[in-house]
Figure 1: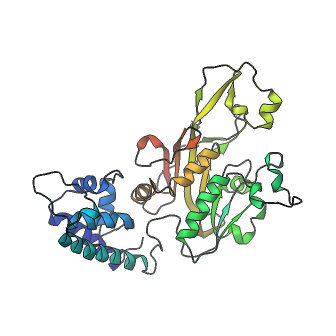
Figure 2 (figure 1 turned 120 degrees about the vertical axis):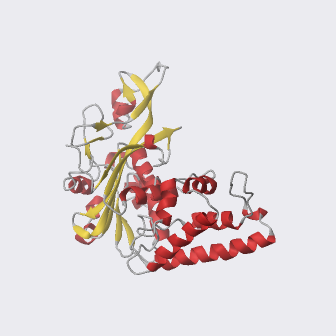
Figure 3 (figure 1 turned 60 degrees about the horizontal axis):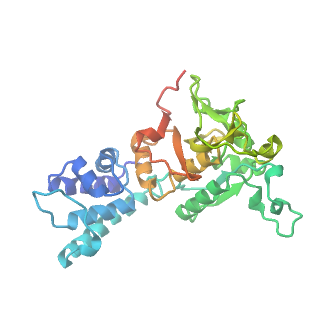
Length: 374
């Protein structure tokens, strides 16, 4: 965000709270984190008066709670519960919390700053359009047919889980901004020149295919002969990123025919005549200037399969990880264009939201200040 007096005052106040009790940033990070870990780099970015980052609102609640408590000088500092505060501690908590939130709100409302702090899903102006791939006609529900009395337009969409997850989140963060979702064929010039969010890969989304041609530094999705139902990611140096499978031990006495497997789009789940289960997908999360209008942004959420697309979205919408992930992006890329390839575990068929603080989940990182691999 822009360097403003309001943001600097908040950074100074947070630093003063810590130093007044002679705490290191590491000690404070452990104390405030609890089950939701905070990195030392996040604490540092919030205290950095030359380039301050706004902490999420729930972290300011933790600050106020921690520094309103009475702590022994010889024990491990821990974050207590709000309901356990004494009357005097509650009064200190209310006063400090009001102060910190007021400083954050003032910084957010300053011209030139982000309207919603660090979230990449906040937009000062519109329109914002999510372009979602269209499922091939052969795989749609009968309700996707306009001739059906119960016609439902959304049945035409692929990656519907990701669209619904992202749509609600963006609308909640941007109540005064026009937010729409479109199929690729509906992407007019007005849509393409605004803030653009592209879901899915290159086969079912021709907008994604065309835009990727202008983004040579980013990982590219490519069709390979050994995968029929998805496209892998490949870097300029030839390195490839592929899904992970769990092989099933048992053999089916009556396996489905090739025609049935093709009709169900499950070719990739069969290998050498044996069935396997998707155990991990790969997601691409990228934010760059819109190639068609550099005053607006392009955000890409893609995957080899649909669970990767959902994982890219949920990395910054899932309440369990989004605050830590937003802080990681702010500290790592500092407002620059970026791209990440992420590991998305699949457990019991469900995509698990990747935690960016876990280095095992970050398969590849690029920013506009990095040199792309040759």
